[in-house]
Length: 109
Image (tube, rainbow, N blue to C red; front, side):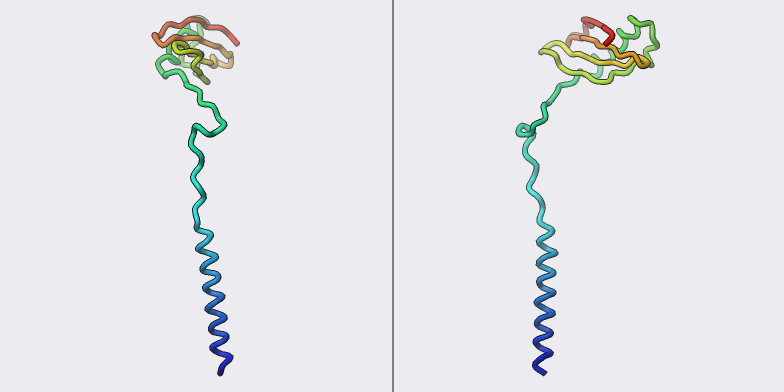
């Protein structure tokens, strides 16, 4: 009869081992590093109203339907100027606009 308690103890020890293993898998990973320590650069995009001003300027310059001109990307050039890249029915166009809403240039790219 001494074999039964030994088997029972062995089974209990094995069950506890599996439980500890399962619980250790639930440990969460450390949080990601803050944004300022990441290698990606942050690009400030043009506000939507300035992008739409550029789309309107491209439509007027090209005679294209303004509903077919889509801003594709934008970036801040300096403290008062944004560059907006647009797609006018497959034709790529670049627009410079300032923060006051003045379109400085529209050029095909």
